[in-house]
Length: 66
Image (cartoon, rainbow, N blue to C red; front, side, top):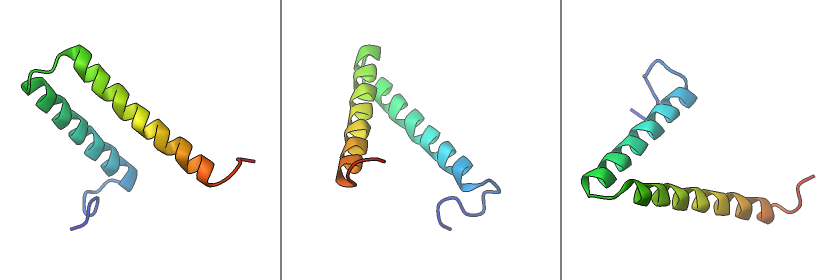
């Protein structure tokens, strides 16, 4: 079964639940590994920076936005 099939919800709901599961798993693993709250915030900040960079790269590759 492919991701999102047969769950009774729409794809957006399934995707959101999947992201929540991943986020909780990463959080629990960081906590279990002894990372501090400040280090977890730094991790989240770094992740956001990577996403922001990717989005800027995608826009600049497409040329100017009208």
